[in-house]
Image 1 (cartoon, rainbow, N blue to C red):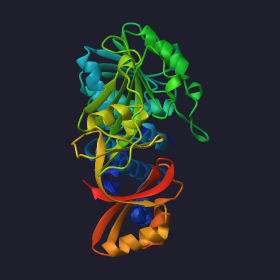
Image 2: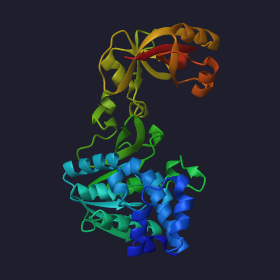
Image 3: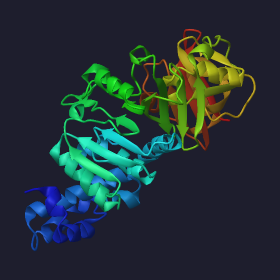
Image 4: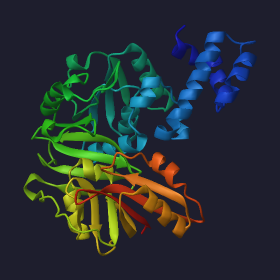
Length: 391
């Protein structure tokens, strides 16, 4: 049975409406009831799609997720809607009116481009994925702006399009792929395709080694709600080759450095009254020095991305904490301190420590009405515990 085709029939759509919001614990009872009047395969497909829609709501929002269609890989690998919208707005602001979306997957980025008023050629080589992308364009009323094509992206002629967007597959049979040349298609092919286009953006893993980034690309790391989601390589006009940027959504705050303006690593200094935890995008973009300069701060350790300073300064690029205690790593001393302070709610953060937060929490057994944050880290090379609270 072709699950998607059957779900697109009137009977399939009615079933999707009926199983919407079904809790996992209720699936067996719901399936048993529905199979009295509907084919068992169709019932299973509807319940599976309902489950995927619930998972997808975190990325696409409940309203869109309830109308769209998904595959397990599609939910896992698709771009979060807020990030796709940001990127589409970048293209729109640059005057892009048409884009070739290569490796389009289930069409999440194509939807964002179309909603920005950009005409899209969405290409993928997997027939099932193409069918889902086409169904999503129809479901969201965007079929007039999105042409979905089943093809090998390496054989698609993108001449005539204002821009190219490539999202290579970064997962294989064994999970995530870390070698950019093992992407499908390889990063080298995507870079050459980008260089041939008037403008281009390549979506890559945020952990890409900086030495693998082409010198003629501007690299951007994007976080959303504090979680690093992806990196993007931009090519064409209005970009600065070799520049690095950290973009923080939803605020839109950005910190940026060109190759000529890159700062040296911050100095290591004693722990001050305040500790700043830079956003992950700032760290990935190697822009901790730029944020430290804004805060008039230094590092607690040459290898740790915690910034310390004596004054509290507002910044969108880091979470700030007031430090009340600095201890050498010693679980018994920490337990005694927390008992004295009557700390029952303990947040454990770590950077440069092998200790697992949950393991420490079990050992200290926090009890009491107060809250605290403990940082497991290194200070000037020595294992250290810093205790404090959000500033």
